[in-house]
Length: 358
Image 1: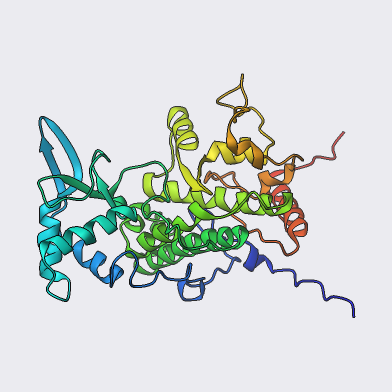
Image 2: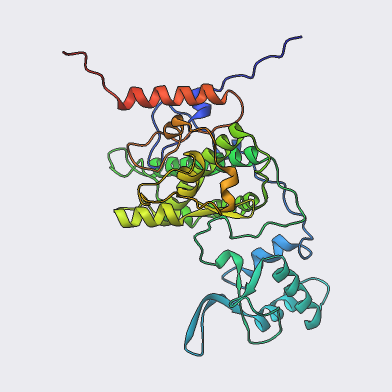
């Protein structure tokens, strides 16, 4: 029996919102319909009832005191004292543990990457040492707010990329719709996304934590088409993630810093937006900001993932968030080239005008 070809997705299923607004004929799923992220961690990793305890210890009222602290003329931001965490664990962990057992729990959290010494030089101790939750670490690698559990196997890379961009795009669209419902239609900002408010939301925090799975995906086994779909989805997710946190870059220097600085850790390596676009998707061509050298040096381990065949249609499916960019599309392995063709035709119809006058 002949195999039934996969169903081609409708435009509403392919296209997700642009960074600022949504086209009138584009329908996007509500948050309740979006994928729910990776399989939840067991409640006993790295300590019993981890998620419940972790959320409690981060509460502003009743949690561990997280604040900027000074030591020998240096200021350490967003940190806490080891002995204070021990106090909190003794008081809040069920079973009446003592301070020695609390230190053991703190060390398990440190070993799992949930927290670390501010200088990354000390084990966990019941002392006046400064520690910081990984979630509070300031970094341009945007999916490093939670270190992925190395004992858990990540899912198929393309599936993770599809879920990542879908989840973030749905968050933005749901947030935009909430703004529209609260404002009158004559308000010029009624259809825009309040990125600052979105960045403070619990839903966005959960998205950031779920993006940690990218740290462990296996991409070396992907074929060229799977790599194309994976990196297009991740580029769009990373760029949108950066916009939520920092807003759109407004001048040349800020754009260069944005595209060369914002990164995701993927399979153990850090990929910036320029690495993905110019290094991987464009076959390691020279980016506009580095006209005299290739994006990736020959010794860079990311070179093993470069697409050997240049694919011009990528420019019709990746979006940097400017008004002239195409809407973000979600690429998977069903009818990949048909979707690329549709995106190219649609983008050209909107942007190219041909005059037949002689």
